[in-house]
Figure 1 (tube, rainbow, N blue to C red):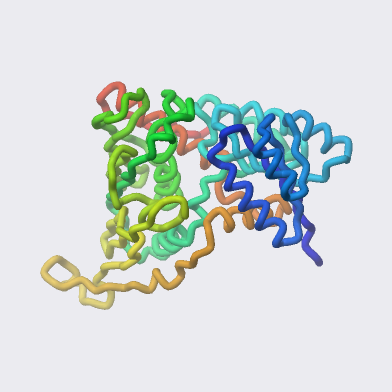
Figure 2: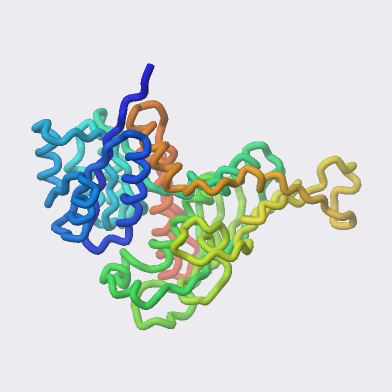
Length: 369
């Protein structure tokens, strides 16, 4: 049976940093014989991009939906590449439309908004909802998840990681990047690591965070050190800063985003009772094949670099779009659900409570929602 083409529309705000992402989606969609439509909130530059590629642009979501309902616009799926504070209202507009929605991360600015979105998505039998935590589609993340699921590290006991980069000054010219509750290293960057860790290791139940210096004269967090405790008992320690000239971060390590310079240096290590592995070197240190009496610090560790062989250069965004198209066809379940994304938001709220109180704070759990 032939596959049905999926027509994707991108909702792009003015001044969005995500404009290149829908362009990648459009390029990929055309290569696969599908049509992409663009919406722009009165943004002449995005309207120009739409005209350049021969696809329509709309001045409002309402106009796009009217065109869809009237039959003048054929669309099956929507990508919401908009500021986080717009997500809940936009999802409400699209509710019941029968479309598949890919919502850019974070899901919401607050856990309260996220819980409303989760409740609404569960009641909406017409739409399919997926959230764009794109690292879940990265080859490194997939490889580590496979290693963990096969218990090649034994029981995981700890994780240590660093996300440290120096953002360019122009980054802070965008107003919301300097507004508490919207910008800052926790909501903008650390939430990626939080989702990645929970994707690998399950729910985080408690956090303790301390704040470091603020070299820039802005109010949002710039440097934090956070300890995460998982429901499994695993402890993770992570340093986050966007104020340091550093070679250690996801982007520098993996080359996942070509906008940033890559170093290939390890930024994260997972420690287990039978072995450990760092990313992106992907060398697993272990005692496999050795007698139990020799599986300790008195004997040399063995090295296994086979995990590196499965790493390809396919961009995570491209893998995510392929998956989203399968979700829109109802051929696959979302790799990152609204509930998954909400769990990450709730962890960030616990981090901020810890920064405010100086105490460890429990993460709100979702049982019963």
